[in-house]
Image (cartoon, rainbow, N blue to C red):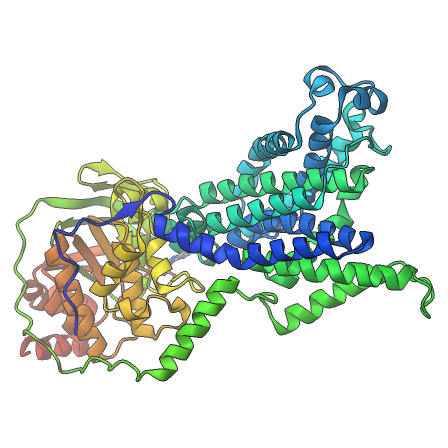
Length: 632
Ligand code: ADP
Ligand code: MG
């Protein structure tokens, strides 16, 4: 039933950000968007009249900006109301860099220094604008990245207001409320196409890179992400800066395209339109951003013509806003994740092919329950040195003492069981060790290194991985991505797809690597959580009730798996479980917690016959269960 773990001497392949195989797949995926964009551009150049060409240029600029917005909002799961601010900064800065000094002397006579004299070619101006606005975005980014997602949304709104006020106030640079003019007409179809393609490719590579994957994991579950070694704030900041830079490039094109603008041009109406495009298309994918830009651009043009045209309708100028709002409501009502859902175009195609292939072949045979190759032998007590030493750990919640000076040690290669009644503090012990809650007293040393007070991601990077009592997977990521999102304790690398599959083989999930993790059966979800923890290369694995909710066959399977993992990888395991029979057979040593204190610590046999344990904790029924298991 359990397959052997990957060849022990095969090097575990890790890469820092973007494995070549992933990059190639990403680029191939981006082609599904890039090719239609090029085809449309050729059509526009050859066939479209001036009006349709203008609509097409608007579309390309919208693509760039919305793809930029999505790089942060979609991957981080934080809608941003502030990105129109980056568009505005891009429009002003890019405009100033592209204007000739003579134009600037006319339109902006008070401009000083470098800005007055700079005159850059379009590509260079785009690049400098993106870099400078990206750098400016760092400051608000540090703040937004540290907020909870709901607070961050409000924070981005505040940013929009601030940028608008600054642009209105900086009259010598922006002409304040007056119209800014004089930007050369550089937003040609060709330029806008190239910038849109660059935005699509960069955003897609980012989404599929280790950075993007980690941010998407954090979007699904920030706590589980930090337990997988992910520094959530840092990942948000990376996306924020990248997305600000892309939006600024789009902003420069937008400014040049409309020619004359003021800070109001980039305020609430634009914010609303950008969010509409992102939400209608699907905010978690690059494809969604492109599709949304297409739909809303067409809708805006159509409704704009209808409102102002000589048709039967009375002049109804807000028809466009009403139409866009209704389209958002309709799309989100029927498709919560937008028209494209949560998959890129190529991922939809691959999923469709997979479904078709699966229909053609018989379902893979489930492993036969009785297929146990070797009987479980009594565990040997390892003689290795102590790996984790927890001493005097104390924690209280609102005056309730949940941990009262707990001492626990785990050796490498040892399976330590922690048992105790509900509410005795077992989960809090794991939470305190992994930095999820901060203990008031005590020390937590891993191979001599003090961990008390560290953030969860730092504890994981130090070599302690965990699972959760209530399963916390990255729900909409695939099985393989759940494992790949984890950060290695050794140097922070990410598993290559092949290495991730080898790890999935250890927990017998390699056949399901492409499945969305939330669609897995319960037992498989538990195993995937263990694989994700192993992907961090831990020295110590903390498992909080991994067999809860499993039937006997699955529990047995899990038990064998843990044996294999501990023996082959030499990791120490601290396991909490209520299945006393399983614990007695699995663990080298057992610690009994009662009301936040250790009341017994010894071998399963010692625990079985410890009168205090039997009396104080287990009660007659459990004692009977223990002795029944003894006969097994
Ligand atoms: P166990 O895992 O042994 O069942 P827990 O560690 O989950 O026990 O809980 C121990 C006690 O601490 C319980 O009374 C629980 O209500 C309380 N507790 C745990 N976490 C918190 C929290 N974050 N805030 C307040 N009380 C908590
Ligand atoms: Mg618990």
